[in-house]
Length: 302
Image (cartoon, rainbow, N blue to C red; front, side, top):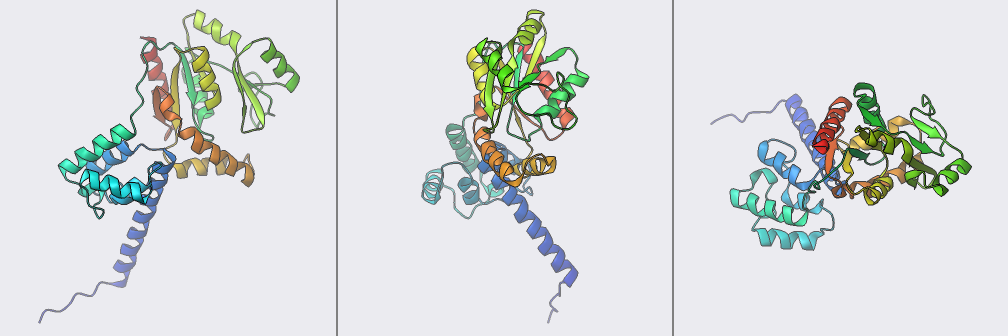
């Protein structure tokens, strides 16, 4: 009679830890889907590229439920329509099932298509704490050929910020004067507290010289620029994950708990608007993200 093999306790503990890490990774990926940090098409691509990835081990039911506006009833109808069993995982789908799911995703969540005739005016926007300012500062330091517009704001300087370099720090009266004189390309109230705006003069002057101009602004401002200058190239900066965005906001330490919660609610709304932009760049590494933005400036200049 064969002896049953006893699994050592250390191996059982290690296996349990690996399973826990996998569940946490899948939960994080579902948050990314829900907040639209990652597209469902990208998750499906990861699942098919690596059958041992977190995406591949996600159940199709969890995948669908993480998508916007899909409840259990709609999920079941979609699975029936696509001929996919609810026990399937993304990495275990057959060729026909993958094709059917991919077609459905493209129809339901179409990718943004860059518009033709874009100009050298680049608009970089994204949710709070995604690192827009850091990426823009890297471009300023390493690509002097690109004119980085300096915004005006009514908020107080943060530690290390220099007037005229990072922002023009104005009082409400001076900001009102610029608005009344039509000297701002765009302006908005951000986070329900302070006003931000882009002085029009330096932007127009740099464009007239044939230079590329980069505006680092919020979603409201980006929409205003698009309305005023339809040829502007719009770039949306994404975090590598929702959890990373939260960590960056907390680690910044410039907002209290209530303000962080409010900003994260705003970030969800901002992330949902990313398809209004021509391009998306993930800020997992500042130098890499900055390089991608600069490369897109070359595309716009053609």
